[in-house]
Length: 376
Length: 177
Image (cartoon, rainbow over the protein chains, first blue to last red):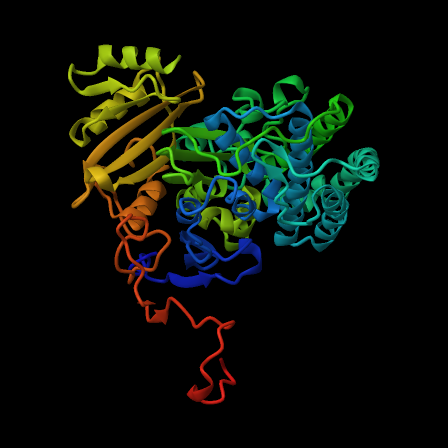
């Protein structure tokens, strides 16, 4: 937190944005130093949602942490589940049955779509278009219904288990998913016609807050934010896990769709295009998914032999890296969670000088920041 | 490159005796470096074209209370060569201090502030080493293993009476028990 607030220009003004502000996507505060409507400096103040997840993890057994992993990033909690499962399983050498692997990927990709829908919808809302948000949430509702059939919950699923998943996919769930896959791409086309190619929308976003490739790497941006800068890097392809190597999908990157590579519009477009790819992935998974076991045999209280591992998976917002140090006990000795919104927000101080306040809102939206993922 | 190749490549470019032994039997091998030579080693790791670790992926502090040490762990990643490497540096637990790597990777800015906040490790040379998550008035560093939660935190009680436990009847009505 800033110790003292100093004003640099003679006519500059300090403005508090948040912590309760609709477009900060959660409880974040920005201390803006503005000259008229131009931002001279924006300092993010975080920590309002700090829950000490890393400390909690060292007090719980490996399987008890699963519901907490939902809450790292509640908009894409399946991805949090998957990140924790992968981290523990790869460390302990647990095999996962193939059916469970496919169910996990289906769940995670559906959740990725719903998370991106929230991202692009609320992004449009932030820059002044209310209708697209409603359209996006309408589509997300269908995914929530599917995931409710699959896991029993609509937001924090707690669906996966170490060594597998908790429930099988019912016939109804399968039919609903297939129907959704047929319905969704045209619906997304409609969404694009509604807002993506809208001239005013493009003018708001093109050439705003350009992040170069070097900056993106040095600040540790990842996921759609990194790909928005034109770097074709996706952990599902470049450091593959689960059944992703067998699946056929493209990795969309920013190409300067309306302005320079790495502007707000590119980051937005990457998310739109990724949703089409996720549809492809889920469709393949439904076809390829074999029958079989849902979980392998895992000790109720798992003990992992002393050692450490840093495991990275691609969550909806980007890389979720989980570093586990084990001393051979039933609880981990140290857990560190590295999330994508955190690095996205840390580049803010660098990006903000010279932006208009209204653009700052667009930048927050384009990075798809979720506050609890920053504070953990 | 594999971790072993990275290590051998590093040995050729870094003065002898600076890089510690490679912990090769670990799942993810790491190398230990003293805080004094940390910056030199990491600069080589970042700038050497065959290593090219242009991204500091994660920075972690682990409290090793049994040995009286704090361990700072750097997970480096190279997009160019798509390899990962782990560098560790150990410092005493009483006055933990390592040089800041914000000059090498700006991503370290927030990582170091967070770890300072939670563990009290001082990253010397950091431009703004203030607490990231906790309020400035906070006393102590709560992720340290010997940290004890006080009765109150910033004037707010840290515990409350259990609503399921009934107060003694003599204690007077117990409407708010």
